[in-house]
Amino acid sequence: MGKNLEDNTLSRVSDIQKVDQKVRMLTLLGDKVQALQNSLEQENSQGSLAYIDPQVVLEFITTNNETELTQTEINMATVDIDYMEGFPIINGLPFWERLDCEPLDYYKMFKLYRNQKLTDSTRSFEKLIDQLKNHHTTTETAITAGYVHALAKVYHWRERIKAFDDYQGFLIEKEREKLTTAMNGRHQKTAEKMWDLCETYLTELATKPDKMLNFKPAEFKALLVEARKLERLSLGLPGDKPPIQSTEITNIKIDNKTQINTKNESKTINLPSGEKKKILQEIVDVLHNAKALPETLEAQGDVQGEIEKGEENGNT
Image 1 (cartoon, one colour):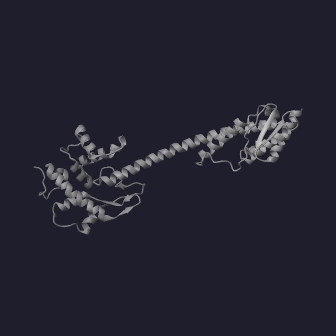
Image 2 (cartoon, helix red, strand yellow):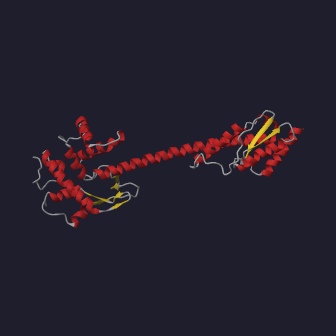
Image 3 (spheres, helix red, strand yellow):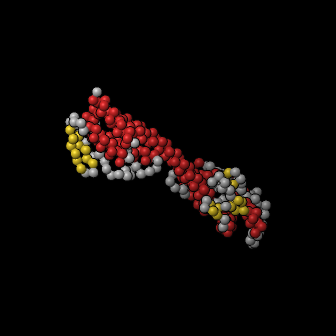
């Protein structure tokens, strides 16, 4: 024999066999649970600090239709929510998993609704009803939107869905941070290789003056800019921030003559002359002012020594 509203031994709404009586009881229970939940006013920045157990409320309203719950009974129906792990936990399980008071069929319905957004951009009761009809996920029959709406109020679907979505967002953000860290690591390694190339090139330029004949400032500058950009990006800084000094090598044309543009002033110097050291020093000064000089050549005295050594080697 099925349970009905007048049966004082009723322990679960799901025990009621007549659909209309079940919906009426779910609606009554949902309104009562929601009203009590709103009266708790226990929240922090993460969500509710407690929830109302509908099982306790159900047992009360089936025997006390005309009276309100006392504070003692409300306290009995109040279940604390723990946030020690950063998301809502009840008795060791996330709030979006099955509640102790939740019949299995009702939890299956909630889970279907909860997971809709894992494969689609939206959730809806209509979609849930179609899922129940097509997949026979529960033993419940004749499910309507009103039925689902009442059920959602009884078992705190809104709060549990929010907790689930917040956690999914947290996982996505953590994965994004992981990928960003990996990307930044690749940027850093690439930037280091590019800086090594620049250091090697400058060292050879200082020790082998004949390399000046093939010096291509535009390519060298592009390498410096990209190395600086990648290094800044790997540290979370804007990649296109200009250097502290605005002086740059903007054009050098190698054709037995070198044109160096610094501070918008052009100079033309014959390479074969004894001015090679002066030209190289000017290039180094520009790189030094632009903060692009490798650390191994950062001290201008060391640079000068390398230049002079290169001159001696070139004359022998």
